[in-house]
Amino acid sequence: MTHLSRRTRIVASALLAGLLTMTAACGSSSDDSASAGTEKVRFALDWTPNTNHLGVFVADELGYYDEAGIDLEIIPFASTGAPDLVSAGSADFGIAGQPEVQVARSAGKDLVTVYNILQRESGRLIALGDNDKITSPRDFDGTIYGGFNVPLYTSLARETVKGDGGKGDFKEVSLSTGAYEAMKAGKVDFTMSVATWQDVEAEIAGKPYKAFNLTDFGVPDEQTTGIASSDAYLKAHPETAKAFVTATQKGYQYAIDNPDKAADLLIKANPDVLGTTKGAGPPQHQAHGRGRLLRQGRGPARRGDPRGVGEVRSVPDRQQAGHRQGRQDRHDGPRLVGLLHQRLPGLT
Image (tube, rainbow, N blue to C red; front, side, top):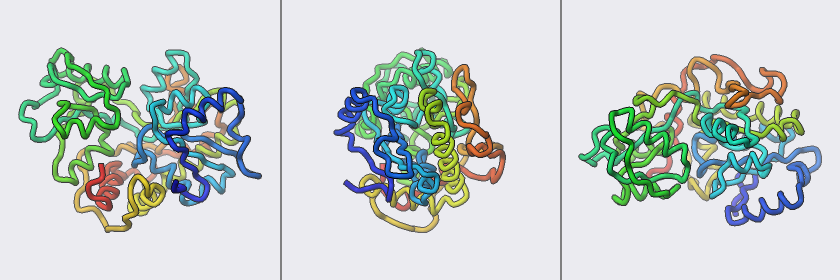
């Protein structure tokens, strides 16, 4: 198995169940196996490595976590989602958007947002560009939706269809990561995408999707991608949490300021998933009209509402925790994806 970097260890998906069982049985803290002078931090991904995770991989590749005394272990995406791993104490931090945290907290789960990656809604309903039967979301009534076994996403899809005057009446087939290939094969009619990943790849491949922004049809704008922890972890490890958030913010800031280099670092960190192609120069194709998803007149990290999303209340000192405001407000989030896909043609 290829190591992601000098300190990062990807845990194989096949071993994840054993990890969870061992954690539950032994009740060991994440610091038990950290090397001398460092503290282990377990970070759970919500998907295969992609540009939404840039700050974490950049921070690791550039040694920001080393400098902070953190030994980072990345848990790959698997059937158990990052929010569940974090709330159960099987991961210390993980990717979780604002709506996921709200749903989890309303269900009594221990989940709290510590860092918002995207400042805007990035979700879209998509269909193949040559599907002449689809001209707007209401046309998805009576079709087949390639879903992800996440009730929240299904609800967002239904509300988008209803917001366009439809009934929100469609059949769902849960396919997870296979949804996009199933749509290309004609087995499902539409699915949900992330504007900062799948949509850009399709444009660069010359086969753009028919895409409908959720927010154009009544779905409230929200910060859809963030990093969450648990109250239990934050209270037990306030200094480590502060150090992790600070190093992570530094990684995202680097990606904002150096998109070409950040794209190469992401590829370097994930050769098994993204290949080993390097530096093909600036992309000839970039996504336009999506607005700034990592920045929108404010820093790349924001506090949330403790009644729903949660806040960084257990990570002291807002400035040191990486909540810088309004600098370098010029980054178009999808540009990073364009750079990555230009280096790896055909990447899905």
